[in-house]
Length: 314
Image 1 (cartoon, rainbow, N blue to C red):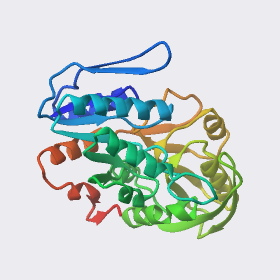
Image 2: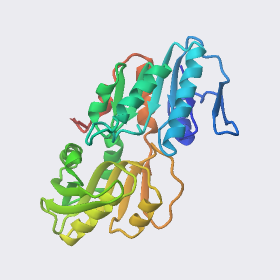
Image 3: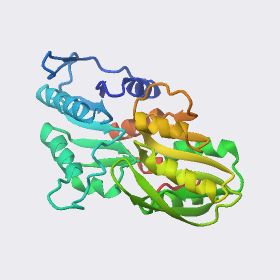
Image 4: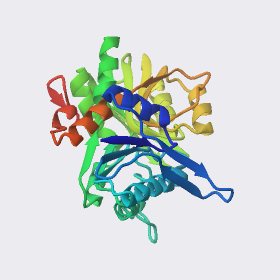
């Protein structure tokens, strides 16, 4: 088995390798002056079970293309099996035709992964679970919830209400509410544009309660901050947000600085610089991904990674 990393999140790749007790594979990734990417695998991979760790976080297109090139290099070097480890699967929100003449880009990325030579995909907290069905190769879909739960149970939260910021996240919120033994609520949301949302109403008991907003992804933080503002007006005592993938562009950082969210809890699936003025707790999923890689390599079940506290994450 050999593990390689693209340039999207090398610290996570090194942490995964450390958790597994293996060395990160050597490869040379350099840009040409015109922006093209050159990859050279500097180890023998003939007949090896190879894993490439590369989330497709911004710059999304660059990181995707870098991964395709690495996969092609490994395929041409006669690797026995190539697994794309994508802690964050980009383009996942474009999973259906909701307007005329638009692409289903999540399916396109799946096709490109297979065409480049991928034999298997390992990913975490897809925006829509049915994206697994876009692949004709095996997909192992992990959840960050067990890592989140380990952190949240240390807080010993009382009088807790789990809130989904939209209808799509209700299933995830329900799983959290069962595990943390809290109430469940939902914010009815209407989206104005890709960067703006308008929160409309709250369904559930909010007044005087500690709130945990759960979501899979935030980029502009519009949904989170608008929902938090509405919940505060409804009498929420404290507000935390729990998000698997926090991309956080400049707009999001400014919104979070001015928001009523007391703490943002997220993971290291994507690499972020240090951010001042926002309390962000970053939990590592390296151990979870490392354990999944070991089990895939040994052809053993990854089913137990979905279970915690006698329940399941889905």
